[in-house]
Image (cartoon, rainbow, N blue to C red; front, side, top):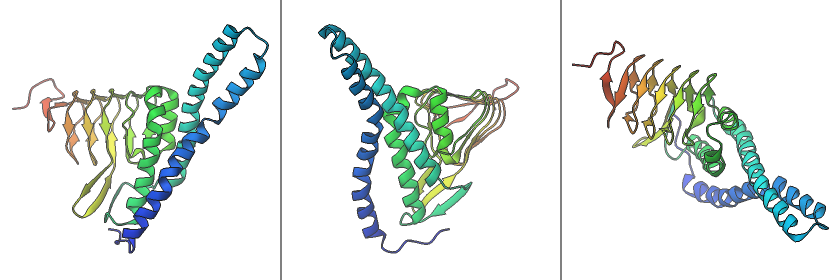
Amino acid sequence: MAKKLRGFSWIQPILSMLVMPLGFVLWGLATVPGIYLCGEVIDASSTWPEWQQLLALGASIGIGALLWCLSDLLMLGILGMIMRPSLDDAKAPTESWLTIRWAFLALFHRLALPSLQWMVPSFVADLYYRMMGCKVGKGAQINSSSVNDCFMVEIGAGTIIGGDAVINGHLFERDGIHLSKVRIGAKVVIGTMAQINPGCVVGDGAVVASKAVLPKFTTIPPGEVWGGIPAKCIRKADGSKPE
């Protein structure tokens, strides 16, 4: 377990003051392609009738918003590639460099959410998740923007992550931050608004029902169906119900 960081009480507020403007600067930089496009359209349409100018400008603003989303995800994905740690499990005090590193990655993901919610499911969202460290299998469909702690998540081929499902690779307890891999197998279905917590393993072909909450370090055998809060087995792989 990592050691407690000395001076955390003053390091945290200083970093917070630096990070807040950084987020808005990144969002501002993401607008550059859209602003350039709008400027070009304004120049090109300067001799057009007013209604044509308005239509052209309106269309360019819409495309500019799309470019903002793409630029936002690309910039934050690159920052995620630089900052993400390579580990399976880790524990550290709340007052530690690991917590600070995790906080930066969490911030990048929050900054990506306005763009990401429009891009799921798509290859663009999958690329962002991969850049942030998530292992995404071929043909997986990620319909949620709440795959958090991407560097701690593995999603198998052909798996479907339902809308607004939440996957977390971290939690805070009395002794600090805990990070643990979430491993989701192939051809799994994670239902709408389900929650998967750190250390969970979901076997191939399993189903986690909508709004189910999978407690930390839960293992679901292949082919089983789990549901409820907390989630429990409601149908075994052979189709029978648990006793």
